[in-house]
Image (tube, rainbow, N blue to C red; front, side, top):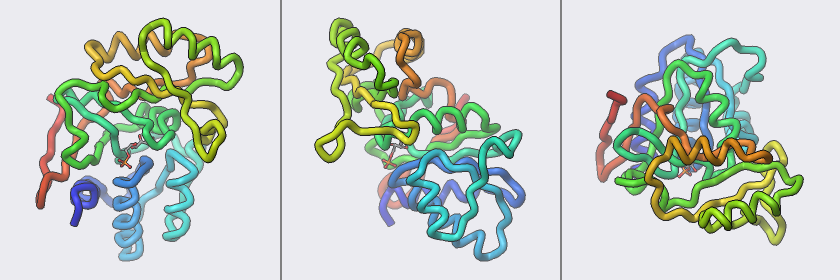
Length: 222
Ligand code: 5RP
């Protein structure tokens, strides 16, 4: 089993009958959704909310019903991947472009677990380009601001066009290399008109499950 699958399958132990579950997005969550489908087939009863079109399609293909978040008052547990995580359990997310819905779902969840392979654990955040979701209107002015701040922005592209999120926004990836104060940076970027969401997830994860070699390591927020 690879490290992503190990972490994903370990996270299943946190799921209890009757829970409302938030499903993240990405290649690690892929293993979670597959295992969850197996358990639902064997009688587990949960309600699921999705953070992306990609996860909804995967879940539906495995006969997992996805509920409209507006029909639910809260989420018991969200399990999601991450692109980088530090020892304070702060992280960068949005490599898969789903940061906006992921943050909305996370901020309405009683408990949040991230499932990652060992390569995602870092001392300092920032090597992974920081995704910022922005509205397309006037995006060049934001791009210029990021350039002036020294953030080395790159507009995300796909198939020779501009990448569009599920909300039809753009993503600018900031090549920062090192983030010294992730809370300050999140605030600074979020304040800029045109910014919808920042891929900095500070003080959000409660538990991180790391797939490491042949086993898993669980880190809990202190
Ligand atoms: C998507 C995300 C993903 O959780 C993150 O990119 C990790 O993905 P993967 O599990 O494929 O490495 O934030 O927006």
